[in-house]
Image (cartoon, rainbow, N blue to C red; front, side, top):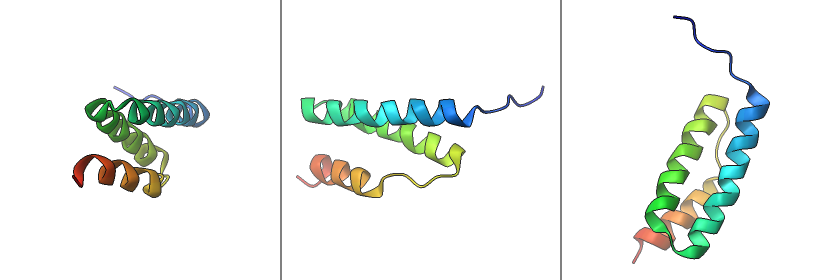
Length: 67
């Protein structure tokens, strides 16, 4: 089976929407959903060969795990 060709622009657009959704989930206090969505964003960053927003990730982790 051949590997499908990735539409980089489409994957970036989805990832960017997910970042926006992550902020909303965080504001609503939906911790577990925000953490899971962040994991998905990190996977897409890896596939795109891009580094994620480390500041955003660190803020999320501190907010939910440094209690």
